Length: 81
Image (cartoon, rainbow, N blue to C red; front, side):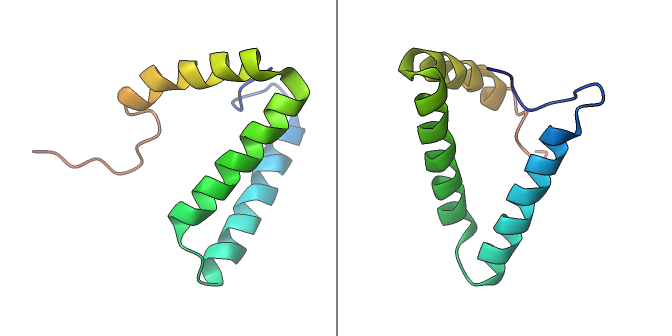
């Protein structure tokens, strides 16, 4: 299972991301709250990953996200105090 990230010449990941971003914009533009879109996207992603790779692999993937979130890797806007 590969994480979404830089891939030498593999534009399938970029195409997939663009499809997700377009759906996100359509949903939020229709009045669906971004956090509801996020929950739906996470649920869909996790169920598809479990179906493809099994629970143990997905647990490993999700566990690996904890330190990345804690380090702020997914924080787009930081406030300085």
